Amino acid sequence: MSQMETTNPLSGTARLAIVVPVAMLSFFYATVLEYLLPLYFSAMSEAAQARGSFYPEAIYSQLMKYQVTPWIIGPVLAGLLSRRYGERRVWAFAQLAMVLVPAVLLFEPSPTMVKVVAFWSGLTGALMWIGGVSLVQMVEPHRKGLSNGLMMASMGVGSLVGPILSRAMLYQRELLGYWQQGDFSQLTRMSLALETPSTKPGLDDFLPVFYLLIVIKLVCGILVGFWGQRPGRFAHDDVSPGWAKTIFDLRRLVVNPRFWALVIALCVLGGPIFQSANLFLPYRAEAVGLKSGSADEGWVGVQLLRTFMWIVGGLV
Image (cartoon, rainbow, N blue to C red; front, top):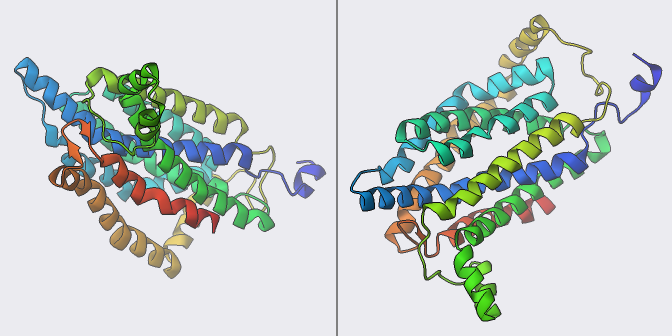
């Protein structure tokens, strides 16, 4: 290893100009799916009824157990792989692997395949979180606060833009009509989710959003894989830790009480509450008139209200 590589403080550090936009797009992707899937499964059910067949509209309530289960082992697997092969490779793989989720929703959205891809989404989501958060920490000590703040702000921006843009794409025909009529006031209100749409989206209206998500994940995987990290070895990292060293480090972590305090707080106390909110929110929105089948009658406002404070928290 060269003397420059060992003394250069930037060796092996994350390129924030790449990592932060990718993080923003990752949260954009996640919140688009959270906004879209309850509406999409309702549209699938309505289309099946029109054909005289059946599609379970309540399938969304069944997906959480498939999506959450991989998190039992996913973070440990992500940590081991990150330690062995590097955070950049793990994060890039997770980004590319998540292409399968919108692809299945596009081409084979049967209840069985949707459940399988929900499990895959949970597993790759764990890899993405651990790999991404770890890579963001790989900066010079005086830039840790900046990198963490940018990461949190990117969460807020991606989560805020995601529902608004996906809603605009769902109702693009209605928006185009306002544009052609010159009704820019109504166009603006609809674009900013300040007006309830007068139409109900069909299955074809969801397809462009899924294609967009596929492109986003491909681009993110390529950006992180090739340019997410500067060449060289990050400070305090082993040159090439083998599996024996990786397992040894894992054993040291397991006997650390601080590690278990964090695990219990996040997985036992935080995780179930967070996922319960995700699970029941669409049905509560339907009950109070914010969602009517595949029609968004205020559902986007719930998504925006839930995520808006992430921006403020990240900036602080």
